[in-house]
Length: 218
Image (cartoon, rainbow, N blue to C red; front, side, top):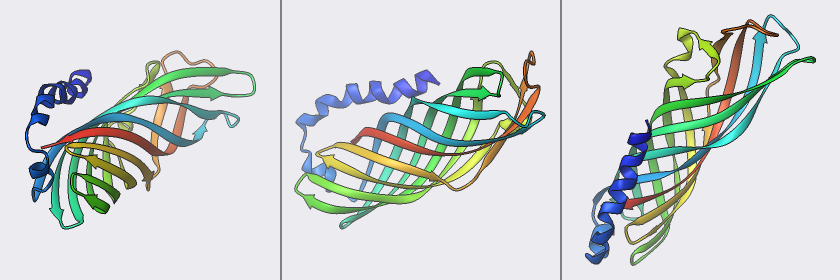
């Protein structure tokens, strides 16, 4: 996973000398494509079912990573932008009862597809400020929670989001700030390898995602 996230970074470093070319001809093209890299953080809301009714789960948010390939079709001040991204979301789960408290790390690896509609509220020469809105589908293909033995239901978890945000473009460089609202509630069945104060739990969560990224347009 790390080498997939590093690939766009190396590509951006390699293409930096291209700034010597004419930038305005790039941003005025009808169709562009580009790469984005950035950071993300999720804001999950957990509820739990299990053999112990007093168990609660809280999440400690950590900073994750994302990389993305996108295409942009420019239509006057509007643009349509299909996107495909790889994401790593990080959390720490705090599982507690009245007498016990345990914290574990959890990494969620996902592949996301988005269809973003953008509108350039300001577009002057090589500078643009835009607002973004569109749907996103997330496929979590791997959940690494360390001490847990996950059931098959944990693999291949889908979710649907509504993405909104703002972006700034200067020459070929873009900066995006986005908030993704989850529309579905997922669940996973958690089992301990060596049970302590619980044997198995069914955990439900709905996690919104905040992200910041920068990219390069071709």
